[in-house]
Length: 229
Image: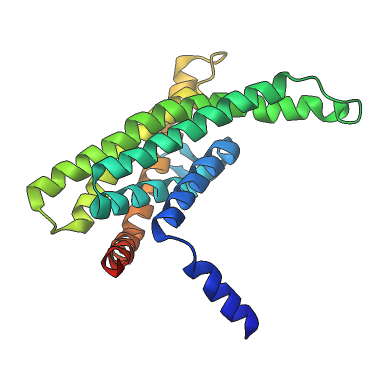
């Protein structure tokens, strides 16, 4: 009983917008740190499909964008995006510093593995920085454009169309910059990248559709907070 009361007090003390921004940053950091791993997604027509583990969190960033844009406007959403860009840049530079610093004697046996993992994260962070910049701002721009066309109606359409376009640009840019192997021929790279981009984008689109109710719930949630004031 006491735990339930404490938990209720804890969550009530968190501002709703702050929680959404924190969720947004969480998704960005998880994608940066853990997104290097790709998992098999099956095959079709003789082509193997793969996807990054980040595909389970990245669509949420677009959902949060659309909720904030719908309630607080495009400038507030762009501010959140800029914060995400700063986090990626800081992660990139700190990873660079951490891999350059010499290890202690105790950690020395693990240095090679550490540099391999986080050295690849440097490339991931740089690729994400470029892809994130284009995709997230494009998502907000398309969402706002559609809102001018449809007004406040068809939130599901505005959300999904803007997400599909933004996620396509994000996927193509990120996968190309992060996974292009310069020691392999173009044909091999094209096959692998296409095999990652198509299922990755389609899965993110599917998750965008699945998460559509969250946009409505999130919008009502934030609006209820505004009306409380």
